[in-house]
Length: 246
Ligand SMILES: Cc1cc2nc3c(=O)[nH]c(=O)nc-3n(C[C@H](O)[C@H](O)[C@H](O)COP(=O)(O)OP(=O)(O)OC[C@H]3O[C@@H](n4cnc5c(N)ncnc54)[C@H](O)[C@@H]3O)c2cc1C
Figure 1 (tube, rainbow, N blue to C red):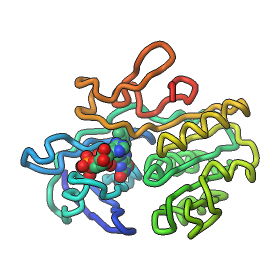
Figure 2 (figure 1 turned 90 degrees about the vertical axis):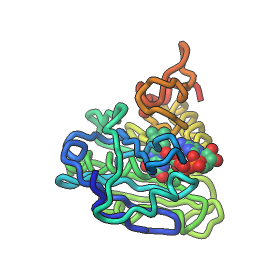
Figure 3 (figure 1 turned 90 degrees about the horizontal axis):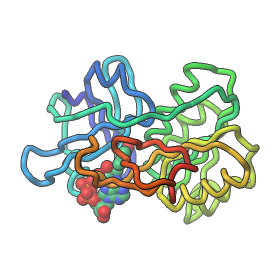
């Protein structure tokens, strides 16, 4: 697929825009693509990335450079080609709610951004609150975008921006939502699960588990659920919080 743009938007964070009518018109929030970032054997495995946004015949991913694969991905330029499979996995189920809480930790903003855009596009009379958590100010992503759609609150672990502390500390200051959607580190999801359970709020998580094949063949992305195991790539990446044992 053709690269349209690969733009650095923050330290080590890029938005990659790809031309592909099929993914752009069929992808749903929560779904992901896998990218083969190199024609050589290094790195061998495809890397999974959530769909961040779709526009016309293009789709975007928001990614952070953390290792070999994402470093290589960041070198791609407009008009170069990438081997991409998608859309893969299941999607968030927005339901018929009016009062939504979205929680994004770090690069977990990517699938949440697509979801918020879709929910708002379908109904403009909703109450939306987004909590963004990051380690430090430069890692706070998409705050202006989320602000277009409702209330946004930010926390940073070092206190360099927003409220100092964990994103879950912000729970004390918000109105109880009807449903929660979240993506981010496991520790954050655990704390959200506990809050959601104690307040009887349904909650969906997008999990960013390591995976190799992305299509349910290698069984490398197993996560414990109530009655055994499920696979993040083919049963997820979106799960109801109560379903998974985290
Ligand atoms: C369904 C899904 C959706 C994702 N969506 C996004 C996205 O939208 N944007 C984005 O930036 N990233 C996303 N990720 C994570 C992304 O796939 C990894 O960051 C990427 O695979 C790292 O590749 P690398 O070669 O750069 O790093 P590697 O060299 O493979 O790894 C570098 C370090 O990061 C750790 N690591 C690698 N992958 C993961 C992971 N999945 N979770 C936790 N730690 C990891 C490794 O243990 C290692 O310590 C997603 C992952 C999944 C499973």
